Length: 281
Image 1: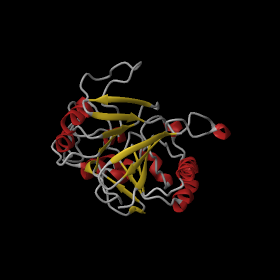
Image 2 (image 1 turned 45 degrees about the horizontal axis):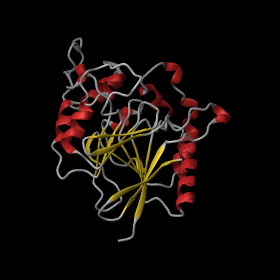
Image 3 (image 1 turned 90 degrees about the horizontal axis):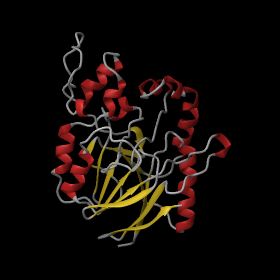
Image 4 (image 1 turned 45 degrees about the vertical axis):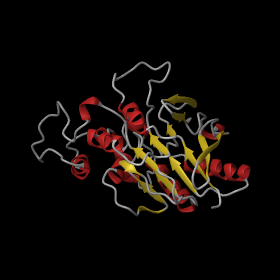
């Protein structure tokens, strides 16, 4: 079998044009095309102006005026892309996922196996981040919702957010059933994608003592774990798993934007084995 190459990308935050530049450069350095691209979340496909209404965080970060440019960049995008969600996404289109929502270029999972185009490569992922009060669809401490029953699944939760009955932030948190699903996966994935780290990053105060991401890694012990979220590049091990944290695509502003060192990890699949080529660039 011919060797196939793929890249895993860190947080992009809707800078699709810069991501395309980076992928072009990776292929030029490899001298070979990438069969598949993966991302660890915070891609930010806010293609429609109304999508920005579902962006979590301050309203000042909503930029509906750039949606036409994002649509054009996505139309020109030439790599098959498989993703998990981070915590800044058009979640109304992801949590209630319908294949084809973004055309045939994108596959997605809330939790579990991730479809892609490399035969034999086992990739699993978990979308979102952890909050101890939101491990179920009906969160502890929620005020009663008079206009609708308590949500039982993502579709119902998305519907309540659309109706402004609950905060869009509720869509960012993964669920206990999803953690349990991942911990029980067989066979072991070659690659596990997480948005947050499985350990506490150095220099950041712990928000929660528990780290479900660590429980998943301990249960599965995949060859590679790739994550993002903290906008820094790092390498470490958890048990027998090699963990790569990827950088934010760029820390620059406007014309100073350049692809950050450690934003992407480039791999080779031999048909039986995954090899890390480098943390680009």
